[in-house]
Image (cartoon, rainbow, N blue to C red; front, side, top):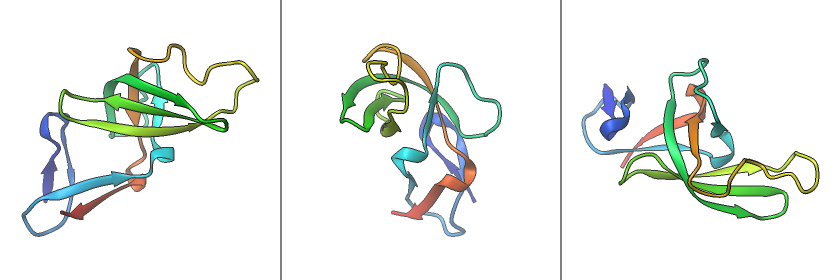
Length: 106
């Protein structure tokens, strides 16, 4: 069964028709400033919230007016160096490996 993810595209899902939810852990989502070419799960979005919490920075990314997601990124750069350029309003590419996502009946 192909699952239509609104205007984002589609993916494989359960065998029975019905509503589903797509899950992936926030730390498995990658943020880059250019489109990665090594995964089919690639979407462009905009950072609308950035929260520094010590070891991590948590981002809220808007993919469409009605679809957004949370991303957790470990702060591994030198002290004083931001995890990403610009706190909000930054265009980013959001991606994850196919084995990191789970489609579950809703």
